[in-house]
Length: 97
Image 1 (cartoon, one colour):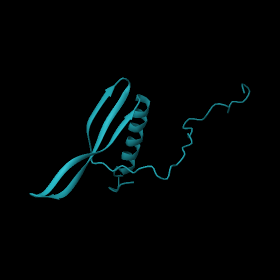
Image 2 (cartoon, rainbow, N blue to C red; image 1 turned 45 degrees about the horizontal axis):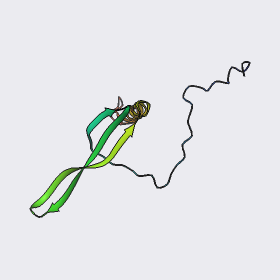
Image 3 (cartoon, rainbow, N blue to C red; image 1 turned 180 degrees about the vertical axis):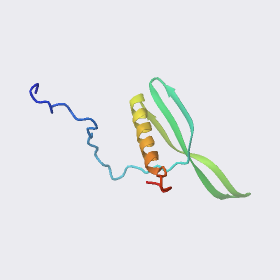
Image 4 (spheres, rainbow, N blue to C red; image 1 turned 45 degrees about the vertical axis):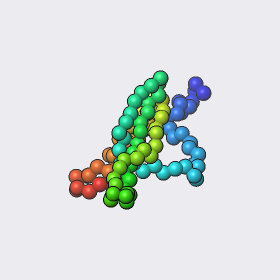
């Protein structure tokens, strides 16, 4: 291996991910709570729910997910969010990518 300069993984090596057909889609509109305890980053995601109550229409925020992960997982999530937002950013022509 020492004679093979290509033996090291190239930058941006892709880690294989197994797809699970029943993995949930999580739709959220806010992240109202977050914290860090014992090496675990935690973020609570919420979404708006509108329903007809006894006194009329009710709008409320409900928790839809609790994210938990170590620092490396949180950094990976932040990197992916930054890249996704960059794709949504307007180009010089004024349109999103």
